[in-house]
Amino acid sequence: MSYAFQAEGLVKRFGKTTALAGVDLAARPGTVLGVLGPNGAGKTTAVRILATLLRPDGGRAEVHGLDVVRQAARVRELIGLTGQYASVDEDLTAMENLVLIGRLLGLRKAEARGRAAEMLERFGLAEDAGRRVSGYSGGMRRRLDLAAGMIGRPAVICLDEPTTGLDPGRREEAWRMIRSMTRDGGTVLLTTQYLEEADALADEIAVIDRGAVIATGTPAALKGIAGGQTITVRPRDPGRVGEAAVILRAVSGREVDPPGRDVVTAPVMGDGGAAFAETVRRLEDAGIAVAELSLRLPSLDEVFRTLTGHGTRQEPGAREGRAA
Image 1: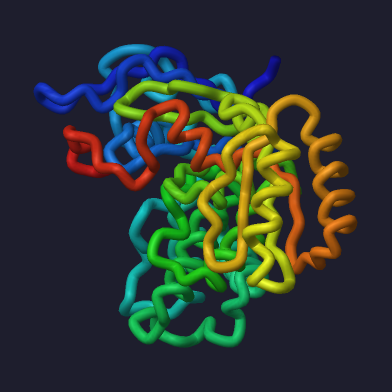
Image 2: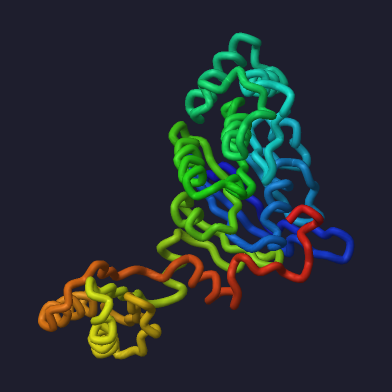
């Protein structure tokens, strides 16, 4: 199989701290690989090795068949990188920033300006192209940073927690932009600690914890690790949530989560569709109208807790090479 990038057995140590302990990662062209894990798990270290910013202490990595150590200069021609913090120059305008980066990447002046205008339009910054970046909001700077990472049409773009610090609305905007990066066959390496972000964007996910990959697969396949499905019932009349809990307990044969103010949930094993249909029938027979009724797979948060025993917000004991 042909991979846009591939890493095998990556090891990286910072003094007595092992940031990576034999990490394997790979992504096919035109896809998004999500690397999911808490701060300090090793995500940023893996990105920096693939981006030729760090040399591994063991293992190997390639980008489109080029070794990231022996052929680093050629690899840099193929990749774009957006780190955790905006790297644009605040004293320049958005247009000046992108033209400068384009010129550094070897584009002719006219080509750099044309490409900059294209990126500014694509990322919703065209009307503010002539403003100094010092006057931009955090969300605007983040979008400009994403545009800067794409100015050279990279075959592989590494996005290291690209939506950190963005409010939910801006995060949705960034998601749409990230999805667009694969339209022309580009490949995205996305690190994140947001479970919903990985679920929404990634074709495949690698779960990393304490420097090691502990699971890989599609979002749907990983959700199967946690097992079963969950039925959620929210009666239109909150006063009937207790009755709904009795029905859900009888159908699932499992204890339901303690009813909240107006919602009750229960895990179901085996044929979730049959259990869901039976729940619908019993609710109708009891005359319980619902505002919400759903059958869902486990969330990635539940998967992560199943795999690690903790959530993605936990801070491991060791820092990730001072760049978690």
